[in-house]
Amino acid sequence: MTVSVRPVLSKQDKKLFLDVPFALYGKGTNWIAPLYFERLEHLNPKKNPYFQHAETQLFLAEMDGKPVGRISAQIDRLHLERHHDAAGQFGFLEAPNDPEVFAALFGAAEEWLKSRGMKAARGPFSFSINDEMGLLVDGFDSPPSMMMGHALPYYAARVEASGFTKAKDVIAYYYDDHNALPKPLSIAYDRAMRSPQIDVRPLDKKNLARDLEIILSIHSDAWSENWGFIPFTPGELKVLGDNLKILVKKEYIAIANYKGVPAAFSVTLPNINEWISGLNGRLLPFGWAKLAWNLFGRAPHSVRMPLMGVRKEFHGTMAGSSLALAVIETVRRYHISRGTRSGELSWILEDNRPMRHMLEALGARPYKTYRIYEKAL
Image: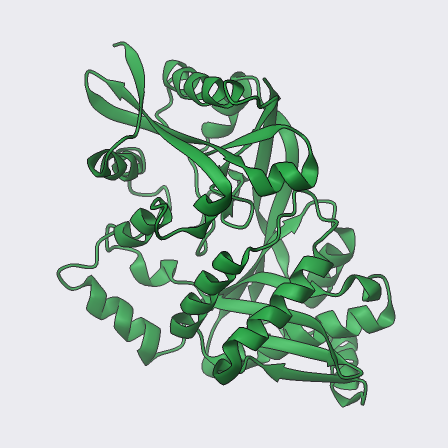
């Protein structure tokens, strides 16, 4: 059968785009269908502030008129302005184990990027490095946490056969809350919390805009030298704030001051994937009730820490280690007190050895690896 690729142009096309993975992931693959309404908003330029600084095109691969694969191509102006690498990106990659389909999808995405002056393609990013990113290459034996991707084991080989090579790996760490904090770290945490120089507080929802600005400021400073870093825009920060108001209690977030100045933070989110598993992407007729009960009625079984940062001036110092331990352990103890059983700390750059050493000292273990690929155009 001949493969053809066409651009996504209509709302109906977007629904077909979102439908593609349902035919690929069967029982035992650990894939969890995302909620349709949330993914449609993510693809909507009127709802997703990413489109304020990026140009995108979605593509569908078809056989005999039936969608079988998908990919996106995108150019993020903020990335280009910061990194000056003429690199476009791809994302949302899903396809059957057929080299012709992968070749056709990448051919369309690469041609779109080249026609706009890009010299390299990098991904997957769906859409940005601050969204779902990386291709799962290890850790297929468990479901993904919220806002983390999943894949089928053959994807990596098909991507590499299309001429892509590894650019960077990122690691997801698993933490079992039944594990006691090692005694030396417990002593260090108690010492940090008694220090007159350090004070840790939860998010203040009554002053949410102020606290989000604090988090953004620390994040932009702490992550500024990280590979591929792009700061959140004010529009993206507003969306984050709107989501936090709904999703989290104030204790899900910790902000630490050092000598009265905000210096570190950590953000945790309930692992919504454990609640939407089995809903097949839809809230009707009764999925909304299940989601609402879990969201407001009880603590999640697991959480994810997607963001944590310590100001750059404290990197490599005892004060920095104390601040990181203080914000991580404060939210962990809160979740344990509510009955949460485990957490994911993700993602961590493979070469961020100080953070990886700290997490492993805390008892966390690497359990999933996501790979970002690149290719010269």
